[in-house]
Amino acid sequence: MAPRPALHTPDEPTALAGGWLAELHAGTPLDEVLRGDGGVTAWLWSRWCSLATVGFSESDLAAVVQGYKREIWLWLAGERTWAHCSSGLVGRVDRRLDEGTSGER
Image 1 (cartoon, rainbow, N blue to C red):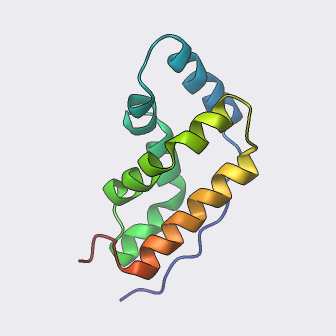
Image 2: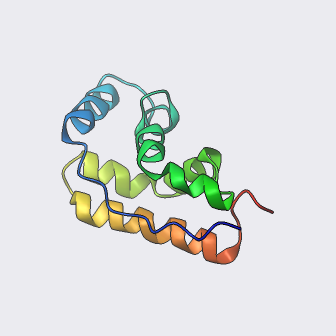
């Protein structure tokens, strides 16, 4: 198996976050903003696709993002910092990898 990738905290997607928040204000469901084309999961996957080398799929990442949606919403609303939000996501992915709950089941 490939060595476990070290996840980095990506730079804050400020321009995208404004668009995602606008979508939410326009009535788009949070789940769609998280999982839809051009959404949070797709953006994160474009930065963390090296997870695929250890059997962790974009669907696995979507499950992590879904489970963290309250914190993501709070970040989009300006109640949490990107550092807080992204470090929490990194921690959750790392725990999933430690538990062996990635796509290599």
